Every structure is written in structure tokens, then in C-alpha cells.
Length: 67
Image (cartoon, rainbow, N blue to C red; front, side, top):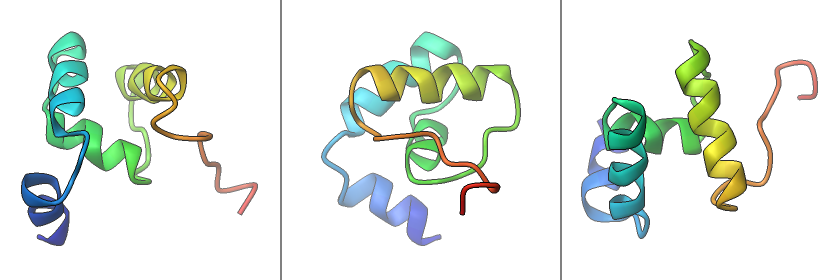
């Protein structure tokens, strides 16, 4: 529930998340959650994470092995 609140009212990148979501056929909220640490579940999620890396919204894609 806090994720939704933060997405709706506190994020500075909401327009960008929506734009990327449209590009990949998903919601801006899903992009927000991926950008903030949710695990990628399919190849589209991985493509979204790579796009976020290109735009320097995130620094790296996390891994359970590296933690």
C-alpha cells in the first residue's frame, strides 16, 4: 500500500515511469516497483530494468547472489 502512495504522490519520475510502461505494455506502477527493487519475473521486466539503467534512473540490477 505504501508503494502505491509513494508512486502517486511522492515520486519525481512518475511521467517517465508511465512513458516506459506504455513502451513495454505495462503500467507505470510496475515500472516504479521494478525501479525500487522488485524482482523481475519475465523478459519484459528485464528489458524495463535495462532501459532504466540506460536512463540512469537505477545504478545497477540487483542480484540475490550479490547481497
